[in-house]
Image (cartoon, rainbow, N blue to C red; front, side, top):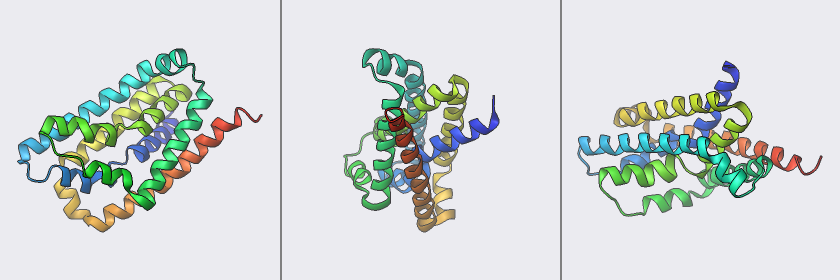
Length: 200
């Protein structure tokens, strides 16, 4: 395994999943829950998001390329555009986040699965990203990136109250905006790589 490629892929996926920006949302969605129920929701979110991403790299090629007849260049262009839209929304508008926050609350397991796992952690952008990593770098690097990012996310969620108190709302917001800026750059690069296939 090439460690530099693994590091790049992990950072790329982490920027897409962006659990730091979601810490205030997670706290608000689970407000009023007992610590036991909250941790159950977070456990469900981590397991569900990992399963979704692994399922996508295992079956995504068959679903997208063979069933829908989509080329990798098409997927890279679409994924790049999607990441760019998500980054711009988080940086400027925040409409997607507000839509999630306005949804009604469910019990711990249901809340962990929807909306925390999907679409917040393992959303369309993350699915596209792991598939692109798998297509370009192979299964081992894609799987290792998922394990690393999901592991970091689990730690953040497990100590979410302490982390939020330590960093504060302003620091979490600034880190989130920086990650979104990186995400926009990644989206543009993927979009250009996808479009370059048709303009050789």
